[in-house]
Length: 230
Image 1 (cartoon, one colour):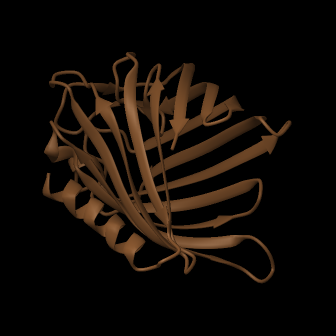
Image 2: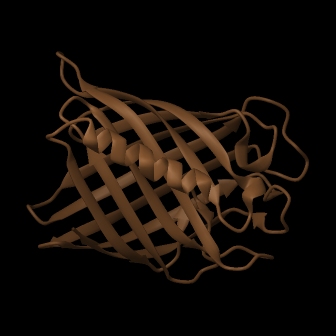
């Protein structure tokens, strides 16, 4: 809980540091929650919440939270607090750097942190994240991802992402050190509402979650999302 309060306090401090800070948020219901291809809702619909602050000077912060359902544990929350700095480049596009804190309310042994750097343009963005202790292990990992979008009209667009997790240290026997995940879908905006349908897939080495009995397995499936922005 202290980490959640710290992340929220950091977001508020960033917002207060710039009189022209912009705040935005959303609430969603997703038919099946996958993060980087790994299921966190056991195939059930779950609610989610997102809050972010952006300043004119380039600093940003925020928090994402989702109901968590994993094998062998009671229901809880999975939260990501983040903060960073982004800046536009004279040649076009932008770069960013920052950090994230991942918290599992019912499985604190899985909590981990990452630092990241990224590049972005109008249609494509890429980010590389490094964790010194991924999901409750001593395993150091690098996660690389590319995200893209294409507007078909003012209210309809396509989106896609590809991510690759790679261990850069010894891999414990009970976890997976290499994973490839991807998602492709279509989104429709209706005023403050957004509807999305996506195909999500994961290819993983056979392994298990650190210190739990749930398996990380290769899989694919349809994910539906309804979002209300505010």
